[in-house]
Length: 480
Image (cartoon, rainbow, N blue to C red):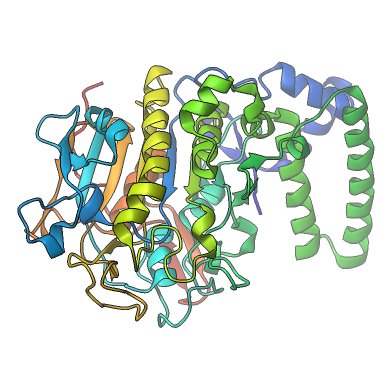
């Protein structure tokens, strides 16, 4: 759950209870309802529609399943057919950078993009590999399940939920439009929870209807005086219940503390209204909505842009499409028919939404302060039909390949139109400037201004753990 913190003089963090002890509940004798309205009047979230000066954000786009680096970003046109595949590279808006012919719109934005072609790790199983990207840590357990466990490392969103600062009642980190999950499993994929740091820091999910991509903004917004009055009444009831629980269970009860955090999160978001307005995509013109596309992914990126404007520091967008129900090749996990699937289903959706997202942020002067990072849990085998992990891999597909894959970076002060790192002639092994998931996490934390020396208590290893064990990626940056 989310623990919302306030920013005060000198960057000090205070919680709801301490705020109350400083007189926050009776500011100038105002009622709770009046305080909500005062908070809104003093900047309680009218951020959607214009950039927040100085606010730094990151949008981490997770392409669940593992997209093929050889067929999208790191093409090898001189390699044999079984390596280079059916697609051809095309020129882009960045000199000397080519990408797949089926990404023509994104090709026009490559002057804004840095391709990190040297990402690698050693985990070829989906769940543990997802965990490595979501947490920035090597998977801590035997790779026998894809599902989350209590012993998992905390997700990046959980780290930012705990230690990140967000102004005016917006959460420090959110996830859109779902938690990555395989069909038939009861738990989300590993690495998406607070893990060993505790469920208190599970990230906030802003879910969409996965059939339509529609977000429900009503639950996060107040719609007039009657709603404000009802909120006041319900808050008074909650305070009464909290006092009763405190007397019966003790003021230090975890139940009481959790109860307070739930209320803190809800009131902060309702008071600001920012998250609710951000996911209300009806506020966008039909032209803009069509520009991003009506896909779940397109609508999620449009919501992400609005959440950036609302001041949310970290937004994770998890890929979703209807291939969730495909038993062999769900999402980017292309074990068969990889070329027609990419050409006809996956790449057009990604190309349209991603290019629009980058261009939209640039036009709104948000790209310099917003870091975009897009990748999957691994890449695909350099040889079509090569078997490495999944026995369902056919001669028309590519299997899992963690030894070399690509991360797309844009914004956040990173110079566009560059390539960092390279692979061998088959795109299967990193040749120079290797990058790990820990390095990507460190890059994101640096963007969000989180100190590298922050630590938390790990109950499983009985020691303090740093937020990251990586180092920021050494890409060239623009001169501000």
